[in-house]
Image 1 (cartoon, rainbow, N blue to C red):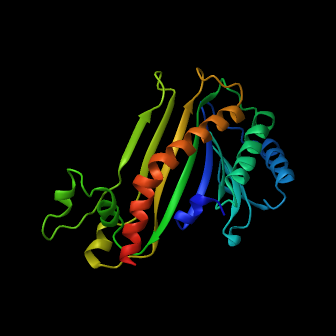
Image 2: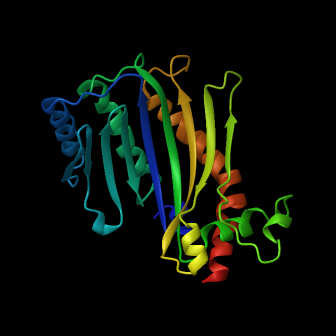
Length: 248
């Protein structure tokens, strides 16, 4: 298993191509695309139409490690949950990006942006927002507020976006999603659910220096890995994992 998976309960690498126009939805086009994907990855056998214009093809989730790809109204999506290695995730995502222009007629002209992201899930049965605040607000000006007598943290989901070039065409975004509500805090009844840390590198299209989606993916994955390894793991992932571990 890759090194990031050892830091959390579930780890994934995902890619999203955001279009300016509607994605193809006719039966023949959709099926031809998914059949081409299945030829590359024969274990992707679980096909589902989720609603009028959303389609999903994935491997069996029971193994805990699986590929997936989907089409919705204006997005092509792909990912690998708990990949054996980052190379395996790259192989899957790159193949989807290679097939899409031919089978779905996706071009640079109709593309708004492309995201490549990592996500880290931490299963926790307790107040998600409180443990995130303990891990990340300590030593900041917000720490005092989290320690108001008899107060309980109800919402703490830090988000930060950065432009990585002068034209703001390459950006990154850190976000944390918690799943605790006021009823659970009031009653003290917390189901086990994941706290998710997302880190995304987005390339806006049109003025980018890359000719293909795969070329852009290589660059975005490189930037993603550098930033996650240098900043996100030591300053977000590790403190959060320690705070959760101390409560379990």
